Length: 310
Image (tube, rainbow, N blue to C red; front, side, top):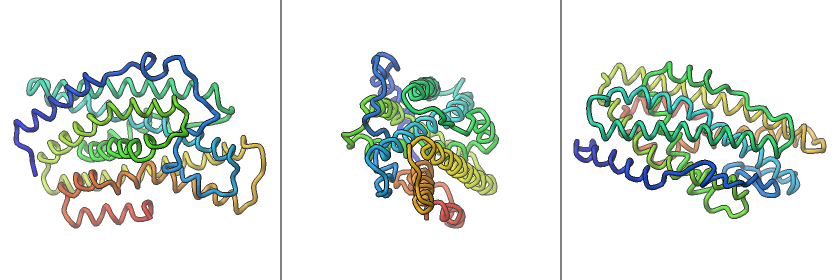
């Protein structure tokens, strides 16, 4: 159901109020002079799927969780490049209008810039504490240029999906896990605090954009969204292969062919779950999407997702 004007205004205002209340600083609140504790896991089992690899020892599982956790941070830094740019772009539509909405988008953009800095700092610190040879393959500017070439409706849909699944990942998998590196966990605690408001603004801006479209424009935008999800899956699959190769180079022993295959398949499945399927299957995102598309369009999306989600 579409919200009334006053309700929409109040939701933007609430996002501003919460943003001010939870505002944090990278050094003062997150890092606090600490280093990563490499005696502990980074990414929890609920996201990493490492518990399926019973041929790995405890130290090997821990190293693999740290590699995945490093990529997890880099992936958020990657997507926030285009998210911040898109929000800055669409804020133009509020410049001479509702200043509360404008402030909400400007604050969101400012926070996304801070998150990018946080994840750059994360990578610098991880490089100091982890084995040499890790490579994060996708380039943020190249990815952002490709994404921003699609329709605003599709970009907002993808953004909404990402920021909703980031919330679900933290609440369901990261927060409950007690055996994680404290600094790694705090990075995503503070990220979650601000992303909670971002997801709400995303939903309202996506709904606002949706109201502008003709049926033909929306159908084309659905095609764009499908292509963007396919591109994210391509990035996730590519990085899963790179991280698997890195692990095999630095873990200190050789594996049998069947074990290498299982490792590769599990990494690919984990990354597909983390960056595509967990968002596509999220109830909140599902409601947002189905409210905007026809049954036929939803069927197209489902058919495109089937090979990834399955």
